[in-house]
Image (cartoon, rainbow, N blue to C red; front, side, top):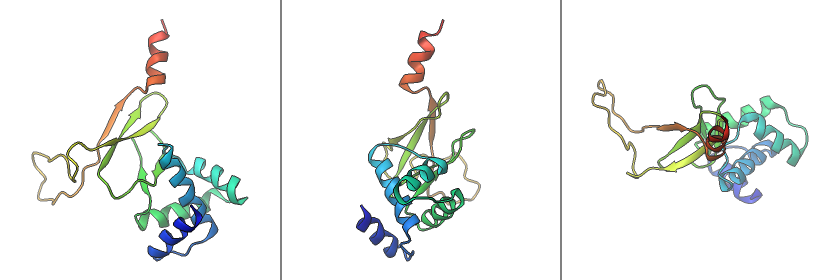
Length: 147
């Protein structure tokens, strides 16, 4: 992963610093595991890989990676921001109202925007971010078992 992240950073005209590589590697590993991580979770995993790293340094890395479109920020209402390495496609998210678990949902239409508003007020719409809400399987089972 290290060479791949380093190459991706350089292709995006970013310096391939150890924290940036570690953040991008962490998010790529999370993508493979279908995880969406908070900055704190990323910082904990990065620190385990490269040693001490401040939360502010992770936020700085995430900002640079997001600006370069190497990562995507998701911020469901009432939940902290989560980050993912799945970029460049048109997908959406489902969020558990109870525990906040977030998962990807592929867009059925395929191209953005996959929904069109009845009135756009003159805006040229190029993207729609759709968040589905409900209970994840664990929370739904727990709710069903509670009298």
